[in-house]
Image (cartoon, rainbow, N blue to C red; front, side, top):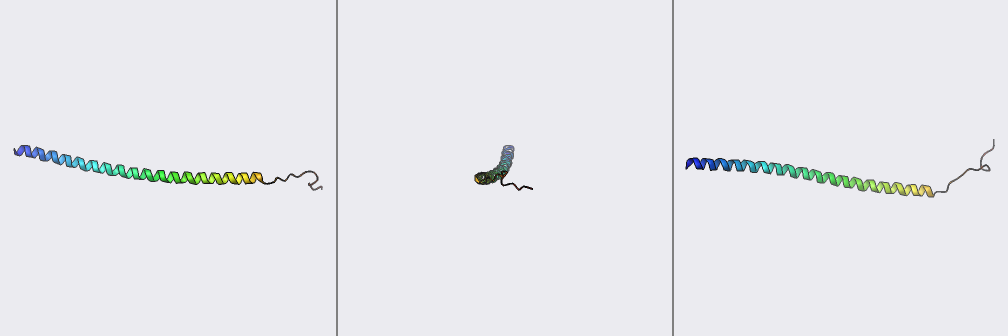
Length: 80
């Protein structure tokens, strides 16, 4: 009977150790998931910022293209 109790105790110790290992892995997975989520949020923010800057650039380009163009013709050129 003592032998059986020893085996049960060893099995329980092994289960407890494996539970600790699973908890450690789950903790690592959570940390990695949190880091991944933070990276995604930073990427999303950077993409939004880039889109806003591209829109501003496009608007500035349109304003530039709308400016009147001055073309010097012979009458405006200085004669030496």
